[in-house]
Length: 275
Image (cartoon, rainbow, N blue to C red; front, side, top):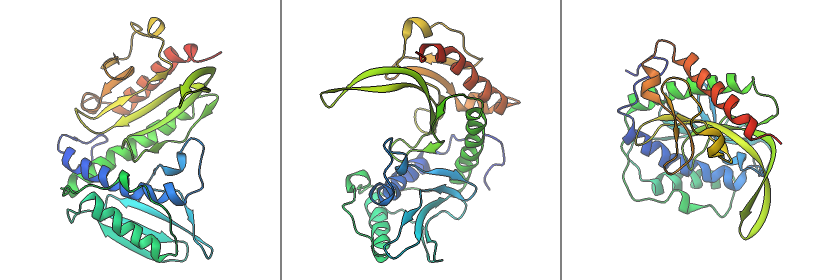
C-alpha cells in the first residue's frame, strides 16, 4: 500500500519514474501536435489534478474536445472526450516507449485526427518496469508539491507562469518573470527575453530535489548569500539553488520549510532580475 506521508519516501521510485517519463513522452506528442500552440510551449505540459496529470484540452474534427490523463491510482493513461468516449491504456504491462506511444497515436487517429507526430520524443525499445505503490507515492508527493508551489505563486507580484509538469524533463515547475530584459543569442540571432526565476521539483537521479534558479545567474551578487537550512547554491552543470527532497521530507513541517526556501531564494534573486 502506498504511503500517506506528506512527502513519502521516494528511494524506490527510479525504475517506475523512468517508465512514467517514457510514457509521458508518448502522451506529450499528442498536445504537441493538436493543442492550441503557446509561444512558451505551455501547451505541451501536464497540469496536476486530483485525478492525475492532465493535458490541455484539444479540439475534435466534428466539435467537442478531448484530453489525456496519466492516472496514478488506476495506473492507466486515459483518453476521454467531451462526448463521453473513453479509452484506457495500462502502464503496468511493460510496454516499450514505442509501443505505448503507437497505441496512443492509433487511438487519436480513431477520433479523426492526423498529424506528423514527434516520434523521436518517445521511440525506445527498452521494456519498462512499473511498481504501483511507487507510482502512488510519487503522485502523493506531486500533489502536495503542486499545492505548495501554487501557494507560493500567489505571493508573487508581476507575471508568473502556470505550475506545470514538463514531459521532456519530467519536472514540475513554474516561472516568475522579472522586468529586466536580457539579450540572448539563439539560432544566430540576438533576442531579448525577460529575466526569470523558476521553482521546481525534479524526482529523478541522483536523488529527488527542489530547485529555484535565477536567470541570468549573477554569481557575484548571489553566491555566498545565506539560504535556509538544508539548501545550498549549485554551480556544477547548472546554476541555482538545491534542496534535497529526502532531507526536507524528514522535517516536522516540510511544507513550511519548502515555502521558506522558495521565499528566501525569491527575495535574494529578485533584485538581480529587475530593471
